[in-house]
Image (cartoon, rainbow, N blue to C red; front, top):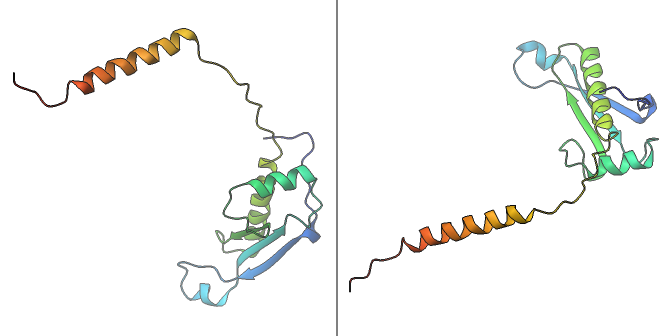
Length: 137
C-alpha cells in the first residue's frame, strides 16, 4: 500500500527496551537480551489528530488502555533485526488508519426481494406447523 504522504514517526517518540526472548534457544536465550519491546505513546506523539483518534478507536491488543502501543519483537536472534521488525510493524499499524474506509450509502431492499422473503418465511412457517402432534379424530 503506497501512500502519497507516508507518516514519519520521529525516533524520539519511540522508546525501546531490551528483554530476553522467550521460547526455545538453549543456554543462549538465558544470557542474551535480543528481544525488543517498542513503546509508542499515541497521545503524546506528533501524529495528526485524526490519526490519533483512529488509532485509539482500534480494537488492537497491542494498544493499552492508556493509549500506548506496545510491540514485542523476538523473531530474530539479532537485536537490530528485531528493532527493524518492531519499527516496521508500528509503521504498518499507523498506515492502516491512514486509509479511510469508503462511506456506506444506505440502500433499501426492492419490493420483489421483500415479497420473496415474506413468501419464504410463510413457507417455513407452514413446514414447522406440520411438525406438531398428530391428533386422531
